[in-house]
Image: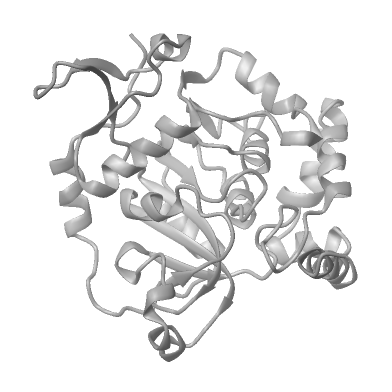
Length: 328
């Protein structure tokens, strides 16, 4: 029987949610502070975004710098964020990831596979359970609803069902066979958004996929945003707020925080830099030096951006995104 890495018990999760503040508390802090306070060794982590779209790169970097160990991870269409975290599973660096619910990992979409992430997955040092993209998202949905599972037809007739803890059940009303998909309550989630106020109200554009449910399913939520906006501005259009302050524990302003991934309407992905990551991973020595130069040897994400071309490069990516939106 495949392992269930987190408890789907809704009453236990409700107790954790009940301890969160309900008032308008100023939650602005640095990424360094947020990771130190809210990511603990042994936690189960989930990241927002989809593919290389709106990924929380800055938080992933900081998790490596602070040498967080033995994290569980939800691999729901995770690309460069998974690649970053796998870099913590290097000889001499400990083991950042120890157990993985995998729907989409290792692949960087049309760019190819991450050689190092593949090595980690094949090493036998991490415990892996398989899901489809849809059923892993349903696990967030169940948690956001506050129930221990949701019924689905997905996975029936597939080999994936035999490699995950989902269970066949019989509908009490019709007798139909269904799959019980267990709730997933991550200890901590990192989500990158376009705008947030200091209390944690967030809005973003483009593909949302599972982030609405992920923010409500997670016991602790770290938000990074392209820009902080006044609370009064959020109140002018409250219907645009996808993630409410009640869900959020930390707000970190990180311009270009999804780099080298893309941010809809803001900047295009840096394809040259993503290609470089893949290339250096083919040589362990080159990979280790690259990580020392770009992550372990810098103080924060701003220094990383400077190493990758700084404002000139970022303006080029912003201009490319603008032209795409204009259809040019």
